[in-house]
Image (cartoon, rainbow, N blue to C red):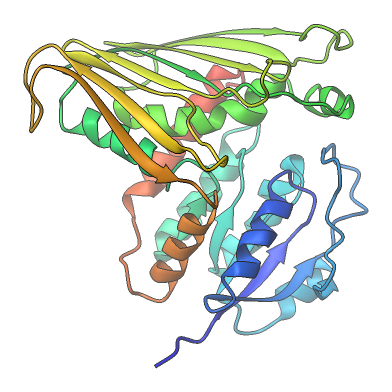
Length: 338
């Protein structure tokens, strides 16, 4: 029997990920029917995209009209970063399953309230951290969980890329931690489960990439310290060769490296693992693993959400605490401790 598509609201069109996610949802018409899109194109909240989507082919409505629609199964919140939490709150209060894009705000309590509202009703809340369904990242996290690297000592992660549009510098300058606030949350999401305990200390460096105006905040790095490990995160919007994003994790029994973290050129993702002593199914030495070429960044996330909303998979309730910990870690890493 063919499944009925989930009725969805696409709340906002101004997030950087909005165009790509619309393209993905267009391929998943058996799973989602976008009933309407909330028109936020006139918002003055800082945002950036070379070609903002117009919502062509979608029914554009106001937020009030969207909230009045009955039988909505899921909402995708894709408005500008500064509007995400305000836009998401009424949907959380209503108890609608949600895909909420990042980041989760520059203060603590609003996002915490959203999480607790969803937790209290067992409502699915899926954050838009785009590496979660990346098979190479999942493999790296499993290696750490299985203890193959021993005790984690240090990690390095880059979210560098090349922004050709000068307007990008103006956009990220609106955040206290600049481009780090905008992008490092993806790395923090995947690193937090690898580290024991809570963050002890964070030291952030914020500067301007070469050629950008003073105050652009497009060249950032942070050292994060846990009780037994450290991580060094870098984000710069002017790195040669376009998007150069990598992950390296070092432990008492070995290292692993994934570079690049994602790739859509048709080449497979590769993880290089080196272990000093045999662990799990692997002998000591160097191991290389290939994962098939990526064709879509978001489809895995959306299909997982559809399965959860339909009751085909349990709601991953452990993510409520995880998402709060990621949010708190992001705030501290960005020097935002309110």
